[in-house]
Length: 289
Image 1 (tube, one colour):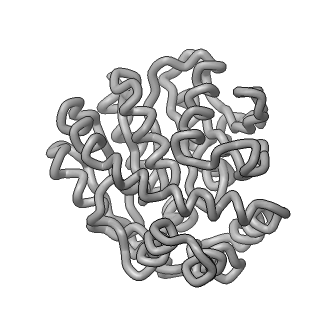
Image 2 (spheres, one colour; image 1 turned 60 degrees about the vertical axis):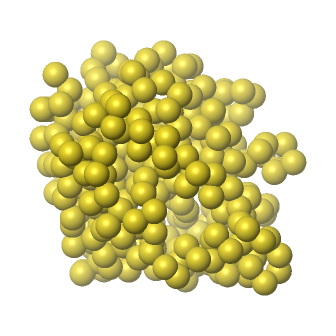
């Protein structure tokens, strides 16, 4: 039996932030930061698998999952703004130091938290959460950067395609040797939230803001070199969004990085929950002393 998972909300800057929480609040904190197009739902099985030893917190970013979804006129959908909300939630919960698990969009949010207060980060687990240009797989990213550089009908059309049910399903099953291990509930759940009126404009805003994350990479690399933060990469090696070179690149600035390439895709937790859980438990038991 895993630990009980609580489903809570907190008011941060006038916005309702949904988060999942489990474990002893006196235990070391592990912050789980989800990617696109999902939510803390992606961690529904991982949280109880770790909460016997850690205080696990998994928020939904603004515009995602069960958190508030203000219009783009009322909230600046940038990665900086999403980071500020996450920081506000941590302050609300009285969390000062924490390890973090980052995936996809969760990575640039996590990197910003680390740049703001390097001393707060005790360890990093990255699961297809990029910090190097090595990891970008073409042609997926060509469309994103073209749209960000020159927004217009021609460049926007491929990005709207990325919001369709077909692509959402593809993100889950592509690169997975046995797709029957991946529950269809994942893409049905995510797509229902993407299809909410107005959510398309939110996602397009974040696509246009994505190059700001790449601009931060030199600062992130400097942080890695200076802090030598313990880092574990558990990476779906067949991901055609963030490829395995992105995982290997961490060792350039963190020679002690532990890198495990798994025969899976972008959402590797769906097919390799057991292996990833074992790697995390082993890693954190050694580095959080």
